[in-house]
Length: 132
Length: 132
DNA sequence: ACTATAAAGGTATTAGAGTACCTAAATAGA
DNA sequence: TCTATTTAGGTACTCTAATACCTTTATAGT
Image (cartoon, rainbow over all chains, first blue to last red; front, side, top):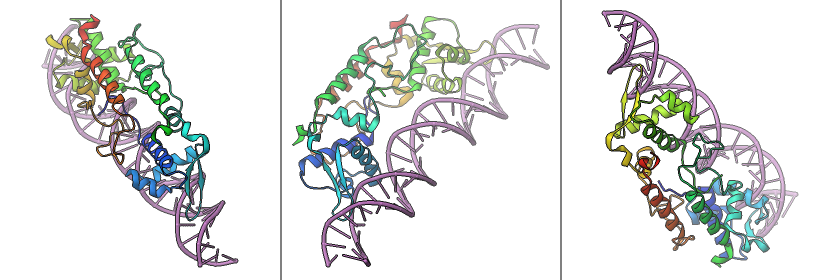
């Protein structure tokens, strides 16, 4: 039980894209990537449907098919990938997901929001090309 | 979608204990607390079963029954409460919950673990008595 | 053209958190 | 002592992320 945790979907996305970057311009299949990451191929395929729609990778069907990173995708940030997989990130929201709180002042002050911002900055400053 | 988020159960636990501290030595019922926090009474009751077993509060059944904070419980930390509700916290683990990684070095370096430690320290340094 | 391969995408199952409901046990007050 | 109230605790339902399965579509190689 970790205090900061990311989903399996995000794990798959970042690690796969880094593998695509490292093997460039090779085309890698969902099966290969799933084996490499010790992840579910079904889950990985679903994640890649999002990445393909978002234009991060190009997919090719058929024998010797698979995925390749698009031209500008090395410059994509972890934050971009996070939002493609998980949805838009809220940087200043309540850590409990509340839009309304019975307490007048937040019990955490603004410290957790500051730390959230630091996580955000970390994701926003890390690019796929950093792992070339 | 926040990058750092805590569960409804933890929300209920901390906020309820702070209310108990503020209303000391009054006895507060599950119904009252749930209304006050705009939370589910059923969920709150379950959370308080854990807090009672852990010795943080004392429960009294019957009319005018409810919960009171135990003697030393003002000095309890948010971290203690977190672990009672959610289970033991892992400070140095993988943010993806992996015990094994296909990559030789973590893509986040040790930065996320550093930030996790800061969240941990924040929880560990905040006490119920801080909200007297 | 045919066949085997691999992604696309719809549907269904699983696991866990949160929620709801119901009965039993305890207790304050009449 | 009786009654109403409130927690204890078991069970079951709901919702979502993750996972699995299956059919369709595209394509490389023969």
